[in-house]
Structure formats: structure tokens, C-alpha cells
Amino acid sequence: MALRTVLVFPDSRLRNIAKRISHFDDELSTLAADMAETMYAENGIGLAAIQINEQKRIITVDVSEDQSALMTFVNPEIINSSGKQICQEGCLSVPEIYAEVTRAEKITVEAQNIKGEKFTLEADDLLAVCIQHEIDHLDGKVFVDYLSPAKRQRIQKKMLKRKT
Image 1 (cartoon, one colour):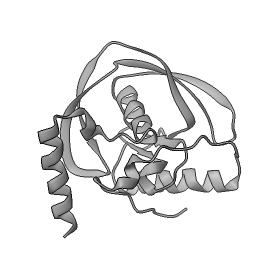
Image 2 (cartoon, one colour):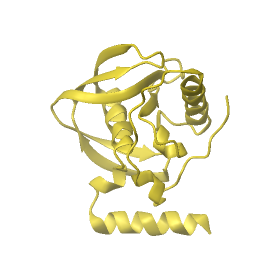
Image 3 (cartoon, helix red, strand yellow):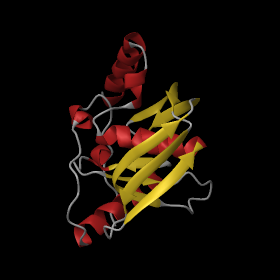
């Protein structure tokens, strides 16, 4: 396992669209382990491969308080959603910035595990939000895209200032 560097908004690589995974091998297992280690080291609850500059459709999620419920989703796809919830979101790629985002309250996601076995999961509350947030990353979307252009621009300036 290895810690990976998390890309920071407005890095243009965060806009890449992840490619479906068709090879379930040791390389994928290593990537998943690196993602989990990086997510935990950054005190995150979710990480998409795009955030570490890997253009692959894989996310890791753990919304437990004691980091005991790691889930890995390969080629995740939301097949059903219902309700609405507004919650405060943050992102490892947009450090120290939080904003309210409206998401589906309940989702059903289809995915594969790192061995390629298909599964379906119903999620609600924080888990549903986290999965939706990470799938957005796979589609080249960052949570600040849900905000007003003025707010997004202020955040972008703040992130660029952090780099210097």
C-alpha cells in the first residue's frame, strides 16, 4: 500500500471522466488498497480514483466513526434514487471548504467488488450522499459545481491562493 497525492480543485484532471474497469487483477487490488490508505490518512469518508489521477471507475467509502466499514465500488452506477436531502459536504480535493448540497435521500447502486463480482446496495443518509459525491467525481464533477458561479469562483481563488 502507498499514500497517493490527492488532486486539489481547480486541477483540470478532476474533470476527466473515469473509464470502466474490465480487468480485476492484482493491480486493481493495489489501487483499492492505496485509495483506502490515502482516504484514511486524509481523514476522508470517500475517495474516487480520479482524485488521485487514476482514470478508473472505482471509489472507496467508509462513513463509520471508527473506520471499520470500508466499501469499495468498481464501476458503480446509481440505478434508482428517491427523496431529497440537503447536507453539508466537503471534499478532499477542496480542503477546508464546506457547503450545502442537495442530493437524493435514498439510492440503489449497482457495482462490482475488486474481484469483479456484481452486487447491489441500497443506501440512505450520509452513505447515500457519499456514494453520490464520489460517483460525481468519476463523471468529472466536483461538489462545488452545485454552487452558484460566484461562490464557485471564490472557492477557486481560495484554492489557487493555497498553492502559493
